[in-house]
Image: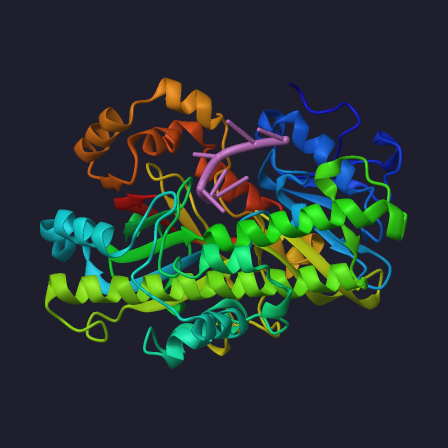
Length: 485
DNA sequence: ATGTGC
């Protein structure tokens, strides 16, 4: 389906849908994408983004990132800044997988050192990082310990031997959202999440061994400052979130919001998937506190996964993790809502920025960017499909136009069902091995769903992200080993 | 995304 005829081009990679597009729109829809990406965007994305534009308290625009696709209520790749004094908080604008995010880890190893042991490395990682639906971790936490994880996130992990202070310095918010309150979390969510720390999950969650080929370095100087210094340097990237825990938190509050929305707050919504509550209401505040628990659970999850990665590399290379210089380049969330101060029409305003399938992308010099990256800007990670590669980028000053938000991945072009029919897991695994990518998967059906051709062209997404001014490319990372959830 | 849907 072609994009709606009301969509007007503003510049090379920016488009707008005016408020006349549908009844009730308070602000326009702003789409950041190239001509090709806009033409291939599911038309449901425009409809959903227009629905988001009707939410109480939305400021400036309902925004769409270059990799956007259909989501629950909001598009995946959607950004909505909402006034916290007058507006709402909506779980559909954050996603079921709260603080789903990416972590990039660098090593001082290069391809010739890793190639001979690649299969053993991937097999060991597959053994030590549980993947798949319902996967349970090695960490058995007491009720009190899990409570502390929800309050402290990755900080708890580092305090208990799973990582270094350095990891926290290179994690968004230091790996801990400050307002987390476990009192706001249901017993059922805790039951589901308690044994899931250190697990990858399923769907498009993965753990990947990558190589930074010299010809794929876009900005040598920035790459150097981010620790990518050697030709064919090996990196490890993984993508996962808050597992059943975040899913339960989202489900609990969606139900509650649907009950109270109309009778208690006279909130009318155009799609029930946009269920929301006033941010300042008791229900809104409790969801915000529970959502931050899930964000912290997710930071802890990625921190423990890194600990396992260090153990595996250390075993396989018979060298310490310090000696292998296994360091976090950055850990960044792409499913959150955060209170941030932004400049709107010359006025500084505190806004609740919903980012769903959208990466925070702070520019150089901004508070919240690690000291070592103050000059480069915050690292932004765009995860591609397991066959094609991923990008490391950095935030820019010009990203103020998206409230400092960027793309987060490739975005699907083919439904999971269609991909499963078209591809076969086992064959795909064989074909990938022949092309130099060794992949282990929790399920062959799940592997088929993640075939590279079921996704948008990652190069096109990264290029559009840069053209729209949302961030700047640093290096493209190519997979050589992959663990699929 | 998810002990995968009403």
